[in-house]
Length: 599
Image (cartoon, rainbow, N blue to C red; front, side):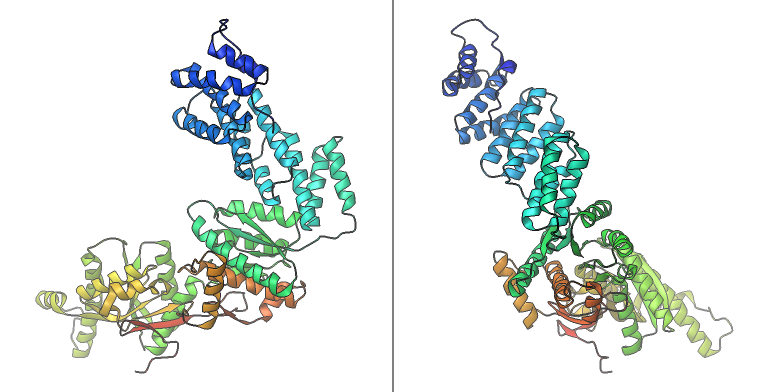
């Protein structure tokens, strides 16, 4: 890689032969970089805070790199960039820093830095050197197809540089056996750069691919690998990669993985999927992780490519899988969970009148509505819905409203039995006595919390405020925090969950052991993202293998019940996993209660 030094921009400004700057620039012009370093070092130290010192420091860093004093160059460059954010020579030093990263093996990061410098620098010399360095790296074939794709996404305003990156990406695809993707790259190079050397090379690439078909099939994985959800996205990738490696090892058949950072952005997800599916031999999609992205991608894929299955491992919105026969959800939709516990309470607990405590969140709104709809569909009644703000410590007002409403109803019923002329007759004194001292109960109280600690807190407030009834919840309750925080107050509560506790069972143990061995003794995350993603990939691979790659969506449906890491998956006619468990709390333990409890 050529040195960055440009003599014209560091011209001598003083005629004295004893001038350190003149000595240094003459040495540089003569190619004697080591002789330039001592006078430049002196200038840098003496005049660090001046423009002359900045200029000397920048040239010194370049000379250090030229003489392969990489550690010194890196240390001085780091110091310069930290202390001089507005220096006129900042882009020069940043360019050296990027070249040092490449020299040290951080090739992709260095290329990203060079691309950024090329995009923002107004110095034509610096832009030319950044481009030259990038071209040298590109033609050296040290970047992967995915890394080249990420660089192309930056949209640099240089057709030659983009053409070389696209051509090199085609070569990488070709070496990977992804012939459809390689053809797409070569064709675009030809179309965008007619009558150029690189277009001629692309034509030769196309000729070499004649008669080779589409090449090795590819499984596309969409996950947020940057931003607030990057940790979850990383866990998702770990699960898929583990399943992929096990599949290849066991079967010897090759299916490549292409992993895309969708940043949990539906717009980015659909744009990436459209481009990749059109250009590559995509035979399946795992993801997106979030419901919003999964919905957008599923709607488009079901219409445009119904032969390609999509399995979202974690999305919880209902209806995503119903968008097409090739769309599948492994995580049970929240609405299923709300309906399940409502139906269980009416069938098994003989409850018919309910109260709902709901946090002021979208989750709380959805769960309250689905629970209410399920109760009313079975002939029951939700007598009261009370919202609350999570994080508050005083809920006397909320509980007073619930108790007052139920007290009024109970009073009317008493008056009917007594044959009172006025059904609402209730002395103020009796009302106050009831409100102050009496336990006022519903058949059951559904706490639509997404967090176990919050559910435990609301159970405590219910007891303190003398609100009675069997406590009901959903999957957000399924955490040790419910037991530790709720203690005896959640004893006898029931909640629905997509998975029962399987930590001691053989499928989970096998997965956890393999996961730890592959990922440096890490354990699967408690949110189950890694395990769900692992299972989603296994469902795809099993169906792809059994069908020999033909009509994979139908092969997934035919699997019916799938034994997974956290239990079984049973896909309904719409491709959604509808396997729901009911658990109860007994003696400070979670106990499976799928069958109706003894009364």
